[in-house]
Image 1 (cartoon, rainbow, N blue to C red):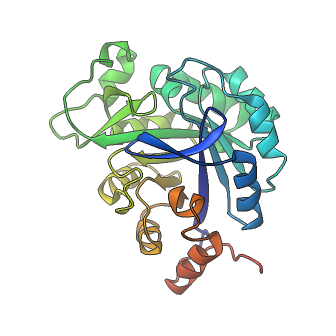
Image 2: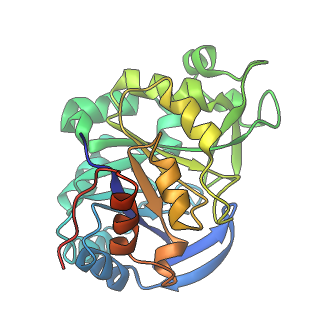
Length: 275
């Protein structure tokens, strides 16, 4: 049985770790290097570093901060934010990351998924999907999406979840379930799935969204957004391969070892944390 993973997430804004609710009202959560070191010592399975305003600000990710974090961790490390081309991917991998996460750029140019997979291997390419409950047939950004992708992934009368980009600021008119399946077909090795509706609410992960994606992809899914209790983590791992956490860990409400003990008690396979 493949072990389920617990992955702390560092959302970076202006060099600091932040946490908000529904992608807004950001609160400072600490220094990224110090937090990365702490989660490495807690023996988290992996770590995710997301520069959450790089794409919306149209700037590159801060590579020196990536390098400083990489120097403190000895667990797989995924980095995303502001990645536009394979050279950006290469720079991040050379800075110490094992995987790169692409979101806005993948929506704007889906071929980037295939290019990254061909150059670095599918195991290095994580496609991040930020999704919310459907609100309209098409967002105002829709005409900027490549036509071939619109034909495959457009919202229709059966769509329940819409992809958003630019840190949740921009609707796309794309069906999140269709987009996940399309991303896998292009070479994505993993899906980082964040529910904009559940993010920061501590009311639990978005199970309907996660389950819908689970039905159409075979690659691992990292569920993100909404963890408020250890039970929430256990419940979502029934349909996801990993749980991403921020608030619960950043503000000292629990630890990686406490989560893993809960998982073991629930007969969920996980990598044991050594004392």
